Image 1 (cartoon, rainbow, N blue to C red):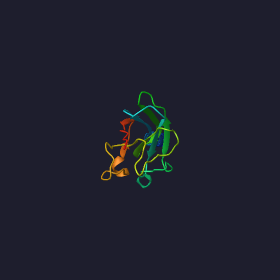
Image 2 (image 1 turned 30 degrees about the vertical axis):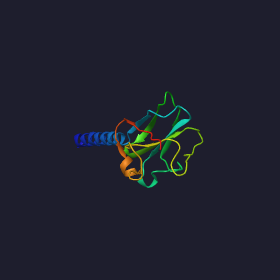
Image 3 (image 1 turned 45 degrees about the vertical axis):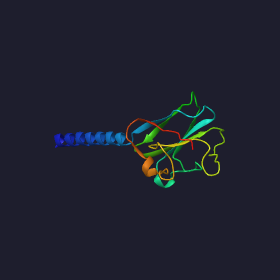
Image 4 (image 1 turned 60 degrees about the vertical axis):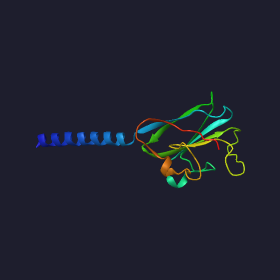
Length: 151
């Protein structure tokens, strides 16, 4: 009987250890680095907004983002890194806030400042920003480049 108890004890310990390992693996977090280049100038800042739900993207007033970071511009480029992100589906919106007022300044209809979205090279009436088109999977540390478009 004692030999059976010892085996059961080791089986329980091994099972607990494996369960703990699986939980750690599922709670992994990743970093996402976002780079923008070829900005039309080095004035103001670049605002990077990260979204993780399709019902909040695009967010013209920047109120429904998952995380947001701002960065200075050096030689018409800017880069940031979002840390501790869980695995999932994300989309990025980049805003070149040239006058650093926190809002997208517009002319008659179109933005006067640069905007960019993950996976977009062109923005127009036929290619409007959507989470479906901008989304990407994050399941490892990742670096993406976003093109900022000036209308």
